[in-house]
Length: 315
Picture (cartoon, rainbow, N blue to C red):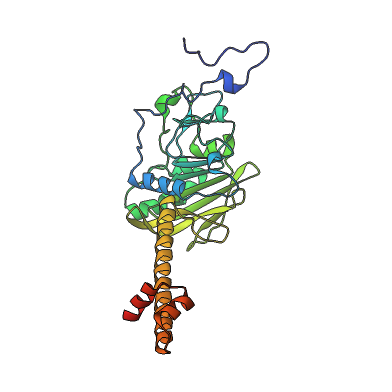
């Protein structure tokens, strides 16, 4: 069966973009000429964000998290995409059309834009990720790393996005096109967290506590903060979700470990209780026998067999 040519020509009754524009299967999931392959930190932090995310307002099958995944956003430029380090979409099927793992996230096919985007700053990406807020971040990063950081990075997928028109930056896409309500940028070199909230169609930087930065997301009733601890054997400051009580949300692995520890503690409590009852029963049997009762009488009184009474007597 021949593949359709996009965009499909409209007929008398206009068809929706979902039908006329390319799907996830028609668009490339990666560009071999694209630089900036995620390093180990990017992979670990993105995994941590996905594995620790819990939201009681949405069931797991209605939550999708993407990491370093092509995000196609423009109806007029269907080959243009951004590749967020991590993003969250709620109210959409966990699987593409409830059947398949996603190779990319195509906005006009899904019908739901991301609610949260997280970018992890790398040398040279400050302008792309932070827009006009990048100057102080670039200066700070140069101080920490001791290297000169480019103020403006090249478009992340210029080869795929075409030379005739320059695609917008990530900042412009998230703020003006996708209108992502919450945008968080973290610089692992300075451990500085930026939190932007969409207000009147523009990002407004939210003030955070420098010592304990935390960004609350009303629509999810969870927040994202900086946590000092060990994840996958690496101890550092990590972005981590917290609940409405201010407690850090456990990952799936941590929950499993906690469950096993609870089971171990319960078995230990049962063992200790059994030993206490055995000791008390032993003392009761001895007291009754010392009072002159026979083994048969003690067995009848305690509900034990004569063999059990004899065994306790000999202990």
